[in-house]
Every structure is written in C-alpha cells, then in structure tokens.
Image (tube, rainbow over all chains, first blue to last red):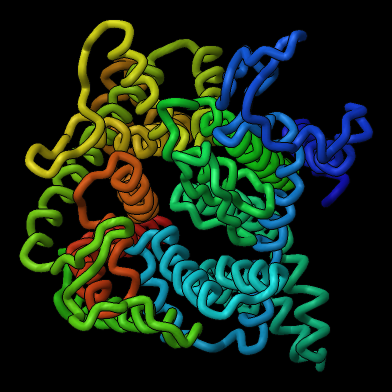
Length: 312
Length: 275
C-alpha cells in the first residue's frame, strides 16, 4: 500500500510540501539566521538611517518584503512560518482524533443503529459547522472570562469541541461501511472458525478500511482548516486572546491579539482592517489555500493508486 | 412518485430532536448560559446595546436568505452546465488542462473567494468609478454580489462532477452505437449524454446544498447581510436558536427527502437493469 503511494507523484508532492512546511516552521530561526523574538516583535514606525520616521503600520509587501506586516506591525512572513506548525498540528490532531474516536466508537458495537446520532446528523446538515463551533466556543469563552483556566486546559477543551463537532457524521458513515465489511463472506467465515472480535477488527476490518481512512483523514484535515479560517474571521482564536492597548495615549484602542500564532489568528486579527491592509488577510488565506491544495493532491494520489490496483 | 409524507415526518421529527439537543447542549456542557436575556425571543448582536426580538423580522430575513441561496444555486447550475458543454466539445489536451485547473480552483476556501471579490470591488471603484454595493444597509438589501460569490463554489463543484460523469458516460456502449449510426458528436451530447448526466447529478445535490449553506453563512457574515444565518449565529443557543434553526431545517429537509428518495429509486432501477 505505502509502496504504491510512493509511486504516485501527486501524493509525494503534497506530502513533501506539508512535511517541509512543518520542518521550516520548527527551524526557521536557525535556517534564516534571525532572532526569533526580534523578528516577531511589534513595530510601529519605520526609520531611515538618520532616525527619521519614514512610514507607519501597516507596511505593505513592497515596504517590508516579502509579505509586509499586519496591523500591529509584526512581519507577516515570519508570523506565517512560525504559525504553520501550530496550524498543521492542530488540524492534524483534530482530524486524527475525529477519525480515531469515531472508528473506536463504531467498533464497540458495530451492529448498533445509532438512531440518536442520526437525528443529530440530520439536524447538523442544515446548520453550518462554523455556527455550531461558534456557539460552543462563545460559551467556553464566557466561562473562561468568569473563571479563568490555564492556557493548556483552554486549548484542550477547544480541541475537544472541534473534535466533537465532526464525530457524529463520521460515525454514521463508518457504521455503514463497517456493517458492509462485516457482511463479507470471508469475515463471516473467520468468525465461524472461532476468531475473536478484536483479532478480526485489527486483522481484517482495518486493512479493508485503510485506503478509505487515508482519504477521510485528508478530507477531515481540509474541513478542519476551513473551519479554523472561518473561526478566525469570527475572532475566535485557538488558545484565547490577549487584549493589548494600541495607539497613543489620547486614542487608546483595545485590540485582541491571539496568543498562539496560528494562521486563523492572523486572519481574525486584521479582518476589520480589510481595506487598509488587504494583504494581511489575503496572504494567510492563500497559505490556507495552498495547504488545502497539497491535501487535495494527496487525495488524488491515493485515488489514483486505488484505481491502479483495481485494474491489476 | 418520489415523496411520501410519512417518511418526511419521520425525518422532520429527527431533525427537530437534533436541533433541540444542539440548542441545549452548550449550557449543559459548560454550565453557563449565554442567553442572558430574560425573554427567550430576544437576541443581542455583539457591539450593540439593546436586544432584538426575532419575530417578525425573521420572515423578511428568511425570504432574503432564500432568494440569495436559490438564485445562487440556479446561477451555479446554469454556469456549470454551460461550462461542461463547451469544454466537452473542446480538444482532449485542453480538457486535461481544465481538470488540473479545477483541482486548484477547488482548493480555494470559500472565505478566500469572498475576500478577494470584496477587495476587487473596491479596487474597481478606485480605478474606474464603477460602484457595486457590497455592504448592506437596512433599507436597501444587496443582491448582486452575494449571489455571484455564493454561486462560485457550487459552479466549480457541479462543473467538476458533470465533467467527470460526462467523460465516464462517453465510453458507454450506447454512445458508440450512436456514433456508429453516424450521428454527430454535438447531437449525441445534447440528446443522450447530457440527460443521463443530469439524472445522476441529483445524487450529489445533497452534498452541494450542505456545502452552500455553510458558504451562505460566511457570505452573510463578511458582507454584513441581514439574513437568517447571521441571525442564527447571534442567537447563541436557546429558544431563539431553536426557532431560527427550524426555519432553515424544515424547508431543506423536504429537499433532502426528495434527493434521498430519488437516489434510492435510481439505485433500484440500476439493480433491476443489472438483474
């Protein structure tokens, strides 16, 4: 299976892109030979050699190459590089736990009907997942302001919300698939020969599901990425936000700055300033688009691989 | 007949139960009530001081959202059809290029398209002085830009699906027979292939509608439209959420019921013809 995937160029390109993005994101300070704290600091004005002010925030990509700065004056390029690891790890984790938990829940009792879950699924079809996530997240945020919890606890609960939203539809797809796999002749025979359930699930059902699992995993990652971007626009940040007072003493404006530097936070922070600094939103959004494209390439590669094995 | 009242009511009951669970789940899980208003019909918009009742404005909002939704769906369907039709008459290598282009276009998040169009409209105004309204005020709701944006994603998806179905369909034997009879490529496409593709397209309608609903929300939020999805977001759970969600769920469950029944019927047809 893995050998076949390696032969698919699309899969390899998509996979290598995501891996290299992760690698860059972890080691960029040493690779570009810059100080991490220095390059992520807030910058309000730009000075020339004599110390005279030449410009103020936000700087466009032509003023501060390559990507310009956001509305608080942090360099977008380094921010995006640094945020890539958080974004990728969050999406990876959420997608993984969605799939893992729903497979486990389905395998506990594969013959169950889950009519309760089907109710939930048919209701959530018409309500966008973003609104669902928003409703849960605002409740969480409100609780967080009343009785503050630690950063790790907050992130874990937010992750649980993101995982929980995706589980009901997945369970209803998996329960159908697993039921049809368990109805296959050779699986029935294995049971008749006296094999234990865990053995059959591990030995036969999971390999049967494996390509489907990879596909669903990539699709879930895409969905989580889109969901994160939407939540960023609704100014719900993973890891919460810190309110900074910006501007001069006569004109103080509170500004929520996301604590973890993932991409949706960058979008959400500058979203109200869309007309003054369109690049500060379009560039992170295109990063989302490129990552989704890489995932789509992976999906295509897997599908091609499956088709080729079918032809053989 | 593809519709039965009995199974529709069954689905409706399931939906109502599901929405009910969803509306009470956040306070149950977190032990906190976001609905701080004393009356259940009221909702607040962040940044505005006073709460608003959901009735009777909800009817207006419902009409507005549905107008945008269905015009966008129609526009998307129409443009997808035209696109498939023209591309299927083009030479092979251009077709292959288009499939690659579609993968790229498909990867663009809906948010990206919304934001790009908004920036583009402002740029257009600055360059040429042509005004396209992209922000809503309460008296004059806007239609053009939201419909355009909303139709973009379904147009791409539908185009991809019909294009792939069309290519599959072209290798079937009835097309070969028609070719051998000396019928023109255009005629076969129009009379035979296109009809079959359209009927199998109905199977995908559910996915596209679900995707568009989530899209509608982001369009309403970014363009500040006074629609149903924006209201749903602001109710934040509770009774107001329940009622608003019902306004979306009841009409769309009719659509889903139809789609599912149609799917089942066509599957049965296939089985019979295979047997």
